[in-house]
Length: 263
Ligand code: ATR
Image (cartoon, rainbow, N blue to C red):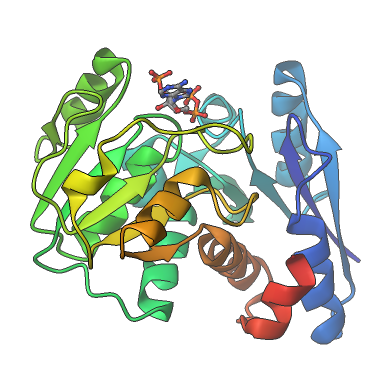
C-alpha cells in the first residue's frame, strides 16, 4: 500500500487528507493519505522515510515549506527559485522537493478563464506563498507586478530573487487590473486590509489566496465596489491535483462536486 502524508503545524484543519483519499478511492488505488502534526526536529527523519521508501510522498505546509529544504537531495526549478517546497517524492533514489503551488495558482486562474497577460497586478504580502504567485504571474506573462508588504524589507528580499517586481508602500495603490491578497489578513473573520477600495475602481479582479472563510472582508470589499472576485479554493485543489499526478501518474478530477465536498 502506498502511503502519503501532509506535514505542518497546525495540521488539524487540513483538507488535504479528505481530498486525496477521495481521489484514491475514486481511482481504486491501494493507498492512504494521512496528516501529521510536525515539529522542526521531525523533518530529517520524515525525509529519510521517503528515501527508504517507507513513505511514497509528502505534502508540506506552513511553516515548513522552506525549512524542509536542507533535508532534500534535489529541488526542481520551481522549488529552487521560490525556495518553497510543498511536494516531496523519490526519483532515481533521490528525495526531490517540488512546488505545485505555482501550477495550482495558474490552473485556478485558467479555470475561471481570466487572462493575466498584459495585466498590472498588485500583490499584497511577501510571506511564504508570494514567491509562488510571482513565479506563476510571470509564467502567465503579467505586464507589471507590484508588491506591497507591511515589513518592507521582506519585499526587498523578494526583489533580490525576482528583480522585475516593483515595490510600493504598504497601503499604496498603483493603477492595477488585478489585486491579490497573499497576506494572512482575513483568516480571522474580523480582520480587514485597510485600503482605499473606492480608489481601485470597478471591473478589476480581486483574488484572495485564503479559502476559509470563503469570502474574506477583502473579497467582500471588492465585490461591493463592482469587481470580479475569487478565493483560494481552486488553487488549493489544483496544487493537490498536481501532487497526486506526480505520485500516482493519474490526473484526478477537479469539478463542482469536489468543491462542495470540501466546503
Ligand atoms: P511568514 O511571514 O512567516 O512567511 P506568512 O503567513 O507566509 O508568514 O506571511 C504572512 C504575510 O501576512 C506577511 O506578508 C505579513 O506581513 P509582514 O511581513 O509585515 O509580517 C502579512 N501580515 C500578517 N499580519 C499582518 C497585518 N496585521 N498587517 C499587515 N500584514 C500582515
